[in-house]
Image (tube, rainbow, N blue to C red):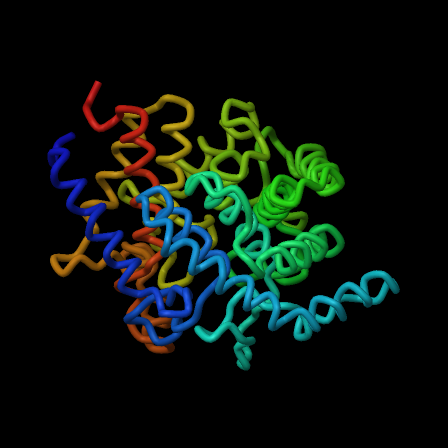
Length: 369
């Protein structure tokens, strides 16, 4: 590679240290240490971070996060029960009374006006937990986790295909394809963890729904209300396994992500994104690189890895997004006035850099062909 293997290995070490340094003693990962609005632990971000640390061999850290998740799920058990009761009675969802996707570091509901009814994180937690058990060669769940796994799986099975906010905390009245992918992966993981074939059947029903109704014009769509492409749709193949990466719809989705969402080599969230000007995210750039690696396009995967590596600061920080100030200066300035500069260090960014690096390493893809 142009910068040399050692350079990338050093950055992987930097990212692993950043994730470990920002894990609290109770197992929670703070989303960003330097951005006031991200002083929380998201199930989604944390699940990817724990997965990356498992790939880096830091199984103890991942285990602590999963124990924290189980505790957080226990704290919101009454919300889950009430949500299930309403669903069984055919009553409409009350977004303000639903289990959150974002918790305080202590594992409790955050009391603010920020949209927080997100289902994706619950599916991603179960997926990440299943990966942890396999990668750490653990035969059984740690004590106390089984009830939370069972409760979460039931919640996904009965609530998971309805409308909620998407992975970006937006569009709460829609059913989002990427969220359905997370629900599928969570149910499949819970089936394996709990040896419950009924959950696998439910997962396959979600998968069929996605494959039958979420394809338009030969690719997957953002939601039932938007035909836009969204880079989170890449998760349907890697890592969630809902669709084979060689499936024509997966190939076309990745092609459109590459063409429509590319910004100077990085990948944006979706075409109409205006958050901090709609810059390119290392998280999504790594995700596209991961997809390229999965279908043997190692040159393209390396290009995405290089783009991320070039965004590390001299102090080892890796931000949330880049380039929005040039793409849409007005919108970027609007967000800066509201919240200050964008996050300069995001643990999820570090996690996905580690994942893509490890993926290329496992494919002997460090060297140019």
